[in-house]
Image (tube, rainbow, N blue to C red; front, top):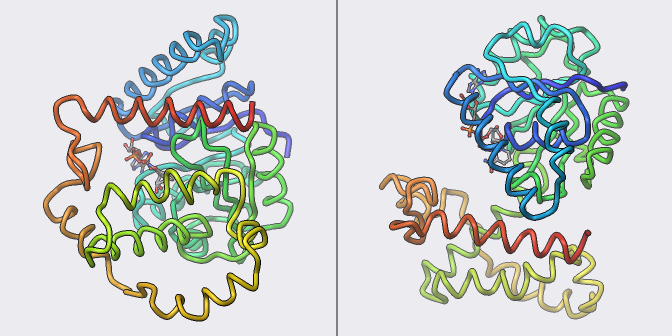
Length: 310
Ligand SMILES: NC(=O)c1ccc[n+]([C@@H]2O[C@H](COP(=O)([O-])OP(=O)(O)OC[C@H]3O[C@@H](n4cnc5c(N)ncnc54)[C@H](O)[C@@H]3O)[C@@H](O)[C@H]2O)c1
């Protein structure tokens, strides 16, 4: 694939930062959204981000100017007419995404690759709405996408191998670490693991085994810290598979295997406590603690990123 022009559809939390990364690597990027407000917001967020990067000496003023020259913002669907790749990052709703693809896949060229940033909706289900689904694929990024290297590339039943390879090559070109998920399963690989961890963590808190602060500490200072360097299979190899076998023998059947939304999560959801964005989640983020928490997260992740990958 000779990719020059990319359209990012959906200018929200993920869309603007993905656009920023592609622009940094000299791709011409159009950011498309239904709403003017979202477009304006994306423009502001990218400008704020690049200023921070300059302050941190991660970007020069010349690079910043060049980056902005590669970006176009629009609410006009004609932007889809002549692009090489669309990365769709609109709201996580099957019907809305399908309706988007029904319209867009007939506007784009027949060789334009269509990639979805869905967090876990079946690629095959979305493909039902795509004209020529052999060029349709999952390209799942992680927030904050300027710092997290992983991109999951998910093949649907119709996806051509050459399309998967092209998206993989492109991901490497923009400095990412792509993995190919060979089969279309709900949640793909990363969210299946993330939600298995969340289920067990909330179960232990609900059972009064450990506090929420301490379960987060278990991950931050123990498992998560090690996972930054070793995957779970490598950890097992280092620990000794005989030991892991014996632990599995008594522990597997004791782990939480509930199939419903965890009680504590449902309770927060029903009370409108959605986390940082509403200043209340499992923790309290009122009185400026939300901004402090985001800054702290980004500072820590940047330090880790620089320590491991720079
Ligand atoms: N937020 C995350 O941490 C995260 C991480 C990985 C993947 N994702 C996935 O990325 C996608 C976007 O998530 P987000 O968090 O950026 O959402 P968001 O709500 O911040 O942004 C979605 C944007 O899509 C726009 N939109 C909605 N319908 C549209 C349409 N038909 N055409 C064009 N624009 C439309 C909205 O106006 C909004 O600006 C979802 O599929 C989500 O699951 C999110």
